[in-house]
Image 1 (tube, one colour):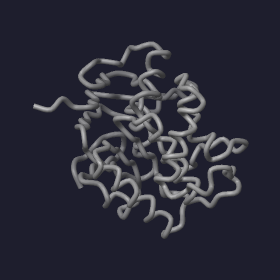
Image 2 (cartoon, one colour):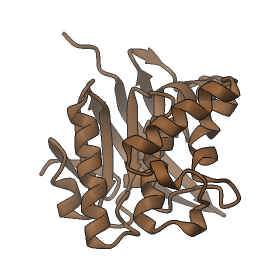
Image 3 (spheres, helix red, strand yellow):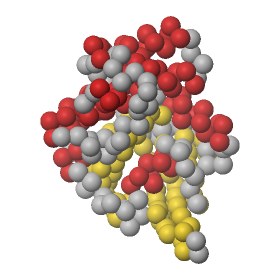
Amino acid sequence: MTQPLLRLEGVTKVYRMGQVEVPALRGVDLTVDPGAFLAIMGPSGSGKSTLLHIAGLLDRPTSGRVLWAGDDVTSLGAARLAELRGRHIGFVFQTFNLIPTLSALENVELPLVFQGARPRERRQRAAELLAVVGLADRQRHRPGQLSGGERQRVAIARALVSDPQLILADEPTGNLDSAAGREILEMLRGLNERGKTLVLVTHDAEAAGVARNILRMRDGRIEGEA
């Protein structure tokens, strides 16, 4: 039996706003197997992004467990979690999260800088991935000189540069026009067909439709498959 790549068990997340507790997740169970392409749909405020942040080891649950490749990582220290994220998880965000003062090439190679890769190696890897996403001729352009679709392609190249096992995408087409959005979705589908594991959160049924499986969230709970 295949070991799940990621598993959440009974995960809750409660935020405190003064004296008020605001539950964002209410006992979520989630299994992501290697090679899966899972979309999580739900309206704003349903807990999708909170779930993705916990799955990506960016945030800790209030209760419950997070298992990575069978190991309980819920209580690991910040440095160890950062190491796991850097080596095994790639992120694609709605707002791209590119550094405006860096070129496309420099943005893509940045994760490898933090991992201590040699300059020549990381630049070569970044250039290869920019070519893969169709931006070989835009390496020296800064984000402000690129269209929204091009910026998201740079973000995808950056997510891939460390050859992660899991890619998490948070509303990756939310700031794009329909044509650019379709291009990004086809790119994500192609990554999955080549063996990458993806989890996509979205409120858009068309975006979710590229995934192999769709789960629905409401009020901090996964209601089941769509």
